[in-house]
Image 1 (cartoon, one colour):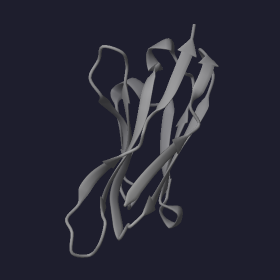
Image 2 (tube, rainbow, N blue to C red):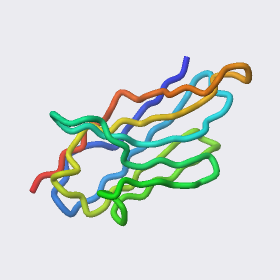
Image 3 (tube, rainbow, N blue to C red):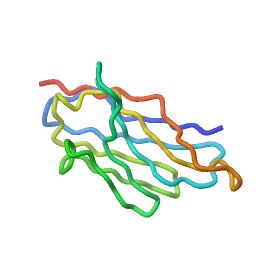
Length: 121
């Protein structure tokens, strides 16, 4: 069993900051990419940021310069520091991890339950 548990969402005014955390636990042999996605009402889920086990990052154009993704491999935890938040950042944010549950299995995607981020204008 693998679990991804997110924390850190909430309500913040425009221009404010929030930090999301996501810890992966359970039967984990290796984690490749960890990332954050978001889904606003009526919209498709989209990639916000991702980071490889080696620290290579990728960001959506809409968050570049405002959000920073980081990772603690020893703790199987990924973070998303969100600064200069805008109302259009309002969404449910989901943690994602591409991992192997054991040495004989392939990589597959696991998802957290989602955490609400609301930015008021």
